[in-house]
Image 1 (cartoon, rainbow, N blue to C red):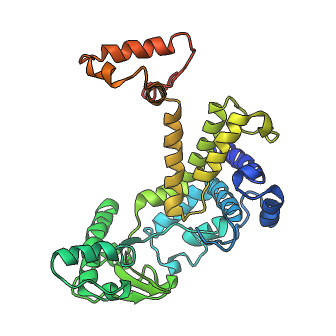
Image 2 (cartoon, rainbow, N blue to C red):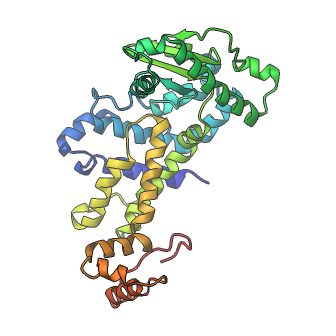
Image 3 (cartoon, rainbow, N blue to C red):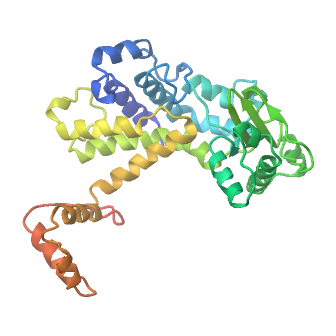
Amino acid sequence: ITPQPVVDILTTVLKLMTLDLATEANNDEIQDRIQDLMTITVGQPVPAYFANSKGEGIARRKYLSVLGLRNMSIHGHEIFSELSWNLFSSNPKAYSDGTGVVKMKLLTGNVVDLDTVVLNCGTQLKEINEIRRKEKKAPFADAQSFFSSEDATSMARHQSEALIQTFINDLRLDKKAIKGRKLDLDVNTPIPIASNNDQRGMWPVWGYANVGVFSYHANVPHMPDVIGALIRAPFQLARAFIMCLTQSGVYNPGATDLNLNCLPELRKLLITFFDEAVNDSCFNAKWKQIEAFVEKMHSVDSIDTIISNLQASNQAIFSKELFDNDDEKRTNELQAMVKLVSGTGIKGRDIDRKSV
């Protein structure tokens, strides 16, 4: 697949992001926030940013996100290959030659996580304490006390062991590769504690304690996240944009002079697109949100959705009495629906046959 059409589509998306439909701010505010980014061309470095942070403004972070995805449409496959050469190690030192996550950070301003959080002591504290209360055990006072407990380390080891073994099996690693990749988990060895991201990937499982964050990590990635972030995300975002155009009757994805004031249906769809599909989350979540939007768009004009919406808006016709007196073949419902849509010209898409 040539990436050029995707590059062109995402370039159009970036141009549209200077309009007020990408954020609640007015055009002047948007221009001020992204002015220094508008000259960044394909393949150039993208400034680093923190996902979901409040300091830079969401318009700027979303613009940076699309800049990075545009670069990934060209470089995603090569970065994936570079990661695979290092068995998807999360250790920054494995990429000291500027490849892999170092290149990804340069070209997107962000990176995909190559380890897996197996226990987040802050977000899971309430759940754990509920279980302990049922077992007549004293609850943990806070996330740090839970993090320091034998319960937490035992849970982290158990979860990590399963993930690591699956990773070893999937990549068919021998003993030498297992040791070199730091996957030789010893259940009798205390779990090391890291205090910064530079210590990632040094052990099979480690704890992370810094600035109120207390978590445990397995030294293997969630591979669907890696594939989704590096390969699927840019193409799916372009696909989502095209779906907005086609469903509103506009078929020129390279158009740069879309008069959205004359295309109210497209404007409405694009507001939703920029709100839901274009997001500033980390790469592990970014691709999932894009694909969720694509799935949503798939069903918008499907036959099932149209029928469901018609029934919901015509409850006087599709009454409880109609359904109570219907047969197993739902004859009454079918006849009522046929009568309702006859002559209206309503069209729906058959998702299975991919036809209208």
